[in-house]
Image (cartoon, rainbow, N blue to C red; front, top):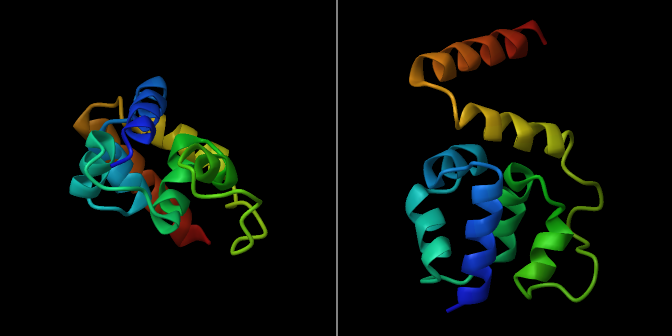
Length: 116
């Protein structure tokens, strides 16, 4: 379907050291969906790109343009995701950690959330 987007997505994920599994966890999209996007078997949708943009540390509008889905600025989300660059960086770092350290990071994040 969209082989050009698949190549670009693959390169963006490699540059950020994101595996399909890490992208799935960060975006809330099934790993099979990420793999199908990477292989070009499915075309990206606006909703998919909205979910994966923060993990890639790229503005949603830019990702939509790369995928050929936008000719103008998206209107559905007037504000960018809060802290999207930092969240993407966190996902990138976490994807290279050993399992035990990922669990520690999750525990730490849960404790921060519980603090309010």
